[in-house]
Length: 290
Image 1 (cartoon, rainbow, N blue to C red):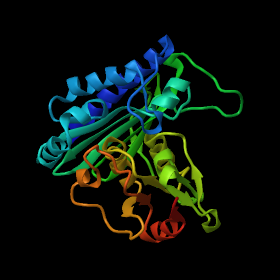
Image 2: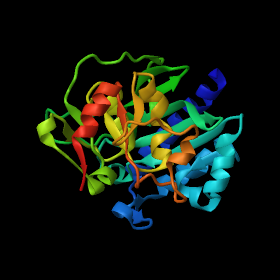
Image 3: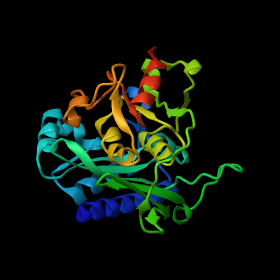
């Protein structure tokens, strides 16, 4: 496992430096498909190529998944060896807009489920004591989250590279009453504020995961894509969160790919990532279909 973690850490640091330098040089923003005005930059494509170069044929990543197809993805994920699921840049809109809620994430999966992962948010440090600041690429401060063997770790970054060794991340004991509420869920569901849960969104799954892992959100929801969920599961699992299906609180299937349709989308289902079943039951009761 040490070798797998080292490979993923090396990759996300390289990806972070690349994304920061390309953003500093200026971006051409395009769009792919319809849903939610999905943004696309050359950095997404460049890091997509980097994923495939570093991890080879046993890779499933956002920008080429449609060509791969669901059936082949399921075959790759079912194998006993490692298959990597990656999102080159999660949160392309905040990335292109100069906001902090974006990053690169990758999961190492085998026998159908993610066992380890690394998330890098290279520009995560946003000083809100004053107007927004746009730093040079090598001055951007960020965060890396990693998980393996059921333990979550963190390290600060500067210019996309770790400035300290990974250290264990302890589960927060403080409840904030706020939950992740990304646009895919908000399109289809409403939250009854009278139940004491309040939404917070920084626009991307990776930002949600960072907010939950560091104790700023109590829980989050998932009904988006395979590569949005797979990397965050080991990280949030390491701080005590589990998946619960809405509204029945059922467990996930044996293989993560079976949570997604032929387009790798989970939009027709909703999953809660909560500290325990009691919290999941309370949150489920506060959610209604729009």
